[in-house]
Length: 177
Image (tube, rainbow, N blue to C red; front, side):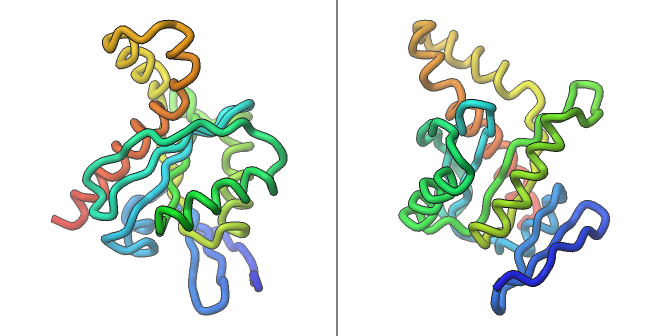
């Protein structure tokens, strides 16, 4: 079913039957792979949880959806696949935890590996999106909304995923204008 992954600059492609799936950090490449319409899913990948947000099909608004506890990759994919099927998702935006100075640390490497596995398992284009300071911003938003510390801990990952996805859909929308 899957041919091979090949790296071309910042883009990796895989062929799934007649469809080419892309793993990239370039919004334009992702735009051409995912098309200009259809819901996207945003993921904030943590060591213990995965924050999830979804966009509307016109890609105007990203909304926090849920936080999943991380288990084994296969089980995570099954849960993600259910959401992808229910929401008719055409692409995945995965937060890339680049260091503040722009360098790549161990979390970036593990996120890239997770992304490669997502492409193979879910057969959707994946956009790696810079997530610097999104958790800090999510915390600010929740404090401004007067959320209790307990409530913030429950929802921070999905709010961060919403911020990651909203940033990406804003950029993708500019590509259509």
